[in-house]
Amino acid sequence: MTLGPATPAPAPAESPAVPLKRHVYIETMGCQMNVYDSDRMFDALTRHGYVQTENVELADLVLLNTCSIRDKVEHKMMSMLGSLRKLKAHNPDLVLGITGCVAQQEGERLLKRVPGLDLVLGPDQIGRLPELVAAIRAEQHRTSAIEFVHRRNYVFPEALPPQDGRVAAMVTVMKGCNKVCSFCIVPFTRGREVSKPSADVVAEVEMLVRHGVREVMLLGQNVNSYGKDRAGELDFAGLLRAVDAIDGLHRIRFMTSHPMDCTDALIDAFGDLKKLCPFFHLPIQSGSESVLTGMRRAHGVTDYLEHIDRLRARVPGIALSTDIIVGFPGETEEDFTRTIELLERVRYASIYSFIYSPRPGTRAADLTDDVPDEIKKERLARVQALQDRITADTLASFQGQVTEVLFEGPARVNQAAPNTRLGGVRLEGPPQMSGRNPQNLKVNVPTTDAAAFAEWPGRLGRVEIERVKAHSLLGKLIGWV
Ligand code: SAH
Ligand code: F3S
Image 1 (cartoon, protein in one colour):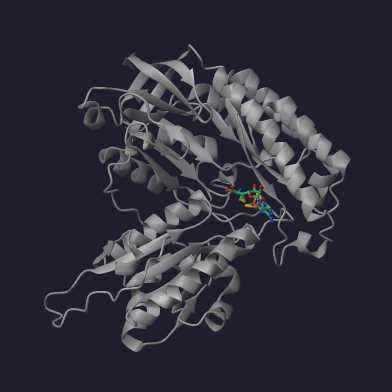
Image 2 (tube, helix red, strand yellow):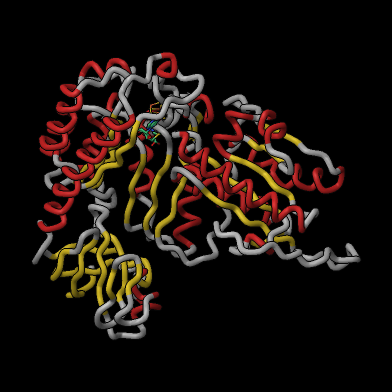
């Protein structure tokens, strides 16, 4: 979010007979679940006459959809609130809200701590957003709603058709997490696991396909326990099969899995289902057995590696990714070396790596955070340097290969004028179409065909890779699938 000098918003309409459209700005922080939730908040507000604005100064409702997984994101939120309060001083009609995991974690306390804040809304209460904002406007009071809805009564917010022509979309299939990883705040902020009925998941994907979507990412904190909370429901492998049967859909991905629930049925699904992409995010967190015990991960390194071996035997060439935490309490240099060895052994296509951040209320917060900051930073840098080399090797292995690409739209580099620098990328030659291959690598295809930008999105092309860049591949279209 960038905030320029505050300017007053347009005056509200005099007559309710011609209602003026209200504008909402949502700043999304954190994981894909939050991106999905922000879309559902837009949907709920759209039904009540709101339109989305990218300009925070034009908004009469500003929501920060927050993340509390690490303290860094919370700090970012507090600094944004400072700027927003100034905006509010110029526009008293502005309603300011905090949603997401920090809202859930802090509740009413946030209203006390943050002057000018009107609304604190937990993830389970998204459906009530329009009603609560209307009440705040009418009654000039501040409110917080962070109750968890009992899993038997929980209703997933309904998705409206996307308006932006997206080719790849997310679909939440479950919420919450029943695991007890000692470092993690998610079970406290997202509550117990609740699965979305499979009929609703299928209906949502079918709706998306009717509106041009060709790839779905099935989302949940721990998708492999899908269905366990609902008698007679499909398991996750069954859900994948039901989604795979939907005509017009080209690709399925999913996030995130817990190693403990990595079943044979799931591994078979990778082998059997044509639409399920050969890409699997399976967080391990650490390569040290004793750190994993402290993390209460309920799996070890040996059983994890067995899953990987079975997967690779069934789906040769499957791309893997993982999450790594460095500097967990008690992590010795030797423990850390085990993590380095694990990365060298598995050779993930990509990883997400984090410095341990103690979270209030979690079990690990009671342990002494004894790894000095400097060492944490140094370990993170070593993990990332090693992974950069492995990722570069992964990308290089595609040189000269033909890979299947689902085109999504113009590449970001097109936004740069020729021969100017944008985000470190120098645009040379014609504009580029962008998409991803099954292994989730970005592939760009330069083209002089002006019609390509209208006609390629949503289609699967066969692309011969001619150049390997730092984070993407460049190639030429040699045919359609
Ligand atoms: N199953 C979840 C995991 C959520 S958290 C999912 O949907 O992705 C994502 C990642 O953040 C975790 O796998 C872990 O690597 C990291 N993480 C969680 N809590 C953390 C903490 N307290 N400090 C540092 N990293 C953390
Ligand atoms: Fe967090 Fe562990 Fe669940 S990382 S989201 S408690 S599987």
